[in-house]
Image 1 (cartoon, rainbow, N blue to C red):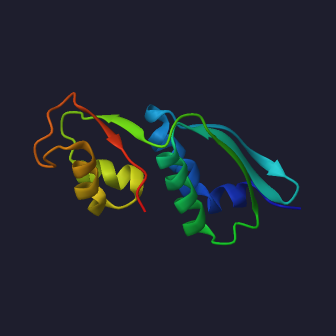
Image 2 (image 1 turned 45 degrees about the horizontal axis):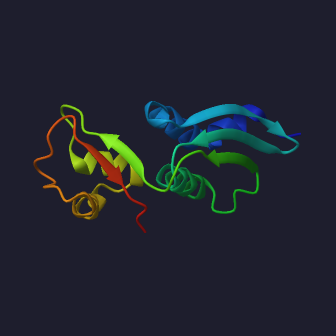
Length: 129
């Protein structure tokens, strides 16, 4: 019989990512057992966030044979983000892409200066490879 606590510990980075992205529309509805697999059911607001969740799943276990996930994407491809006081574009990229170095592509996509984005500006985070 699978151990729920053990599987939750293994996939903790995925569960924690949902918590970090909750303010932006990510929601984990359930974390339970489905036979011998951890079952994650939730939703994400964009393909950008779905890709980030998928990257974290694969970093935990590339085969993810002990995971059954049902994660619906409720919005479009891009993820809107409103710049807050203290934000840097590299920190935003680290959160949504897992790599701070994606900021030049995001700045170019939005036609902004990565070092001078006014607080309150909403940018679009595109799907990047």
